Every structure is written in structure tokens, then in C-alpha cells.
Image (cartoon, rainbow, N blue to C red; front, side):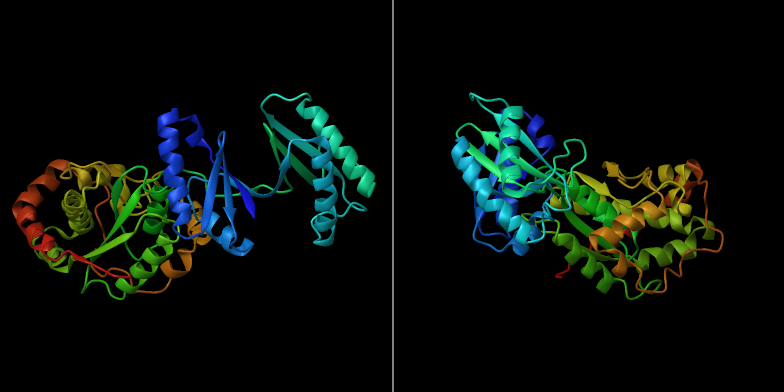
Length: 383
């Protein structure tokens, strides 16, 4: 079986970079699918003996693919093309893909190369073959069924559907980032968004025991979910014992500052791990104003002591939008498993942190020394 695999923004890269991205995309697909590829002037032709369900399962989880189509192929000759349509249309009718008695149709032709016919002429010719075969009615503006004919030099591909895929860039083409991941809804979605932009991801979970419980199992499930979208690049998961640091904050800093100092510490631990992992940035699930630590002034205060870029791909999204993505990618059901939340959150958390005051408290509690002890507890987690 053969499929046309289409990419989007990869095509606007320079020839050298495009080849690099194409090769990475091919490698990622071949991680989980036994197949070969032909490169036909900006179209990747996937050749495989795998079943359709397997092909769809893989291609629906590979970033960098905009759409794909199962194709039949012949040489660019009108008689051969007509013969292929004569074979294909009855099969589509039999499988319920096309009902010529009830549905209208159109033929769309795309052509690359030099030929003695135009795209419109080829579309009209193929349409006449379908009419002769089925007596179906034509509707060029809003057809119920579309037959696609793609002529590329001496080869012609015919297909009837374009299956939408994830788009984005091939995972592993843009370096590695450290993604802070909790047991909630937002952070797995933020990690997914970075995969879409071609980043490999390392997940870092801050274990706040005894202030939280039953979170690590949920995080491991989320890591497994995200791995499905990271073919060709292993998702790494690390956990760090953060409860001791949080206890010191609660005992030695104003209660309202707990969340600010907690997040500040998380960013710095993520920065430490990023240097170890040769990662280039930190990622979290922040959305402006969603919780106390995510007001503009608190975002400034929590990130002040971290010198590495921090990306928040959900920064402008509301909760409903984030939940919709979580449901679509399969992380939502795990996120909503009850885990009791965090008991360290104060009754009245700071929402407009004063940076100068935060710096004074950081010095007072000797945050750097506390975090050095936390760094020693970082451990890799299998999932």
C-alpha cells in the first residue's frame, strides 16, 4: 500500500534544512511503522505492508504531518488513468465511500511537470470516466464526494480523501526542554504543545509529599500518554523530593508567600536539571490569571531567579480551551483523578508579589542552600 504524506511549514525551509527535517520526520514514522519512503518533489510517498489501522494509528501521532492519503498509482497516460478509475470507483461504491445515486461528485487535479494537458483538462477527462461508469451528477462548488488526481511528471496518484494530521514540526528537530509536570490538567497539555513545535521533552515532577499524595502514578501515566506523540524521541521523566523545601518555606516565610516561593524553587530546580540534560529552556502550564501564582506580578517574581528561558505555551488560553486539548490528546481523564490537591496552599495566597520583598525573603530563608539539598534528590523514573 502507498500513502502520500504531506507536510506544511517544512516546505518553506531552505533545501538543506528541508532535507534535514524530512529525514527526521521519516525516522520518527519508522520508529513505529515498518515502511519505506520515496521523495517525489515535496511529497513523501510512504510504502508499507502494514494494515490501514496501524498506518492511521502511527500517522495520527506524528508531528510534522499536515495530512495524508491512501493512494493508487499508475503512469501518466490517459488510458491507464481511466483504467485505474474504472477499478477504483466500484470498490469505493462497494465500501460505502461513494453513492452515485444520492451523492454529487467532483474531480480535482493537481499537476507538477510538463504535460500536453492542463489540470482542468485532466479533471474534466477523469470526471467523464466517472460519469460514464456511474451516471453520477457533478457539483464542482460543493460536491458530496471528491476524487483527487495528482499528476507528478510520469506518475499519477489517485485518492479520495485527505486525512488531517497534527501538523507542527518533527519531534527532535528543535532540541530538548524541561517541562514541569504536575498531576493537574495544564502541564501535560503544555508539554504536548512543545512536542508540536519539534522539541524533545524531559518531564520534571516536584513531589510535594507530605503536602500532596498519589501524584507520581498520575504523572507516570501522563508521561506514557505523551510518549505516544513523541515517536523517535524518548520522553524522560524525573522526580524530585520537594516537600522538605516547602516545609522550610512554610515555617520561615510569610504564609501568603508560600505559592510564590514554591514556584520560584521549582523553576530553579528545573534550571539545574536543564544544565545536566543539555536542555535549552524550561516549560510550564501557566495561563495568565488562572491561579494565584500566575498573575503578571507573580510570574515576574517567581521567574526572577531563573536565568534560563521559560516558555508557557498556554499563557493566553482559558481553562475550557486547555481542557478541550487535554480531552483530545488523552490526558484529561488521568488529570481529573482525585488526589486531594496541595495542602500547603495558604488561605490567602499572594496575588501581587512585590519583587523587592520576594528577594528579601529569598535571602532570609537562604533559598539557594535549601535548593542544593533538593537537587541531590533528583531521580529518574521509569514508566
